[in-house]
Image (cartoon, rainbow, N blue to C red):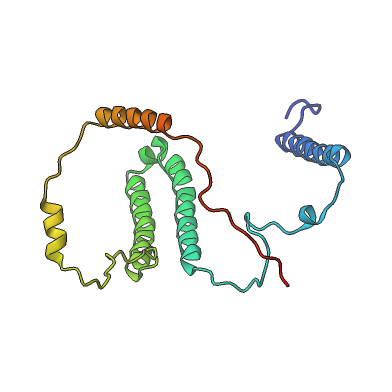
Length: 196
C-alpha cells in the first residue's frame, strides 16, 4: 500500500457493513414513526402459519414433515459443498502442477456423494419418504338387487333425442300452458275457531 490515504480492503468491508446497518436502522425507525398504532386483540394475538392459536398446543404432528425437512437440508448442504469444490479444484493450474490432483479430487467427491446416496437409500428403504396415502376402495353397499339387473341396464342402448327439438317443444308447451292458466281462486279457505 503505497498511498496511506487509500482504504484497505478491510476498510471497504467496514464501510459496507456500516451503510447496511444504517439502512436497516433507518428503515426500522421510519416504520415505527409512520405506522399506525391502533392495537386490538386480533392484531396482538399470536400468528402461527395462518392457523388460529385456539386449543391445546399438544396436537398430533406427523414426523414425516420433520424427516423430509432434514433430508432437504442434507442435500442443500451437499450443494453448498459441491459448488466451491468444483470452482477451486477444477482449475487447470492445479491439474497441470500434478496430474494426480484431478483424480484425488474426483475420488474425494465420489466418496462424499456416495455417503450421501447411502443415507438417502437408508431413508428411502426405511419408508420415511413415503407419504401416508389413502386406501382407495370401491364402496360396497348390501342391496337385494342382483348384479344381473345392473348389467342388463348398462348393456342396453338408449336412443338420444335431439336437444334442439326438445327445447322447441318445451317452449311451445310453456306458451300454451301460460295462456290457459288464469288466476285460480283458493279451493280451501281455513276457518279458525276461537278458544273457549
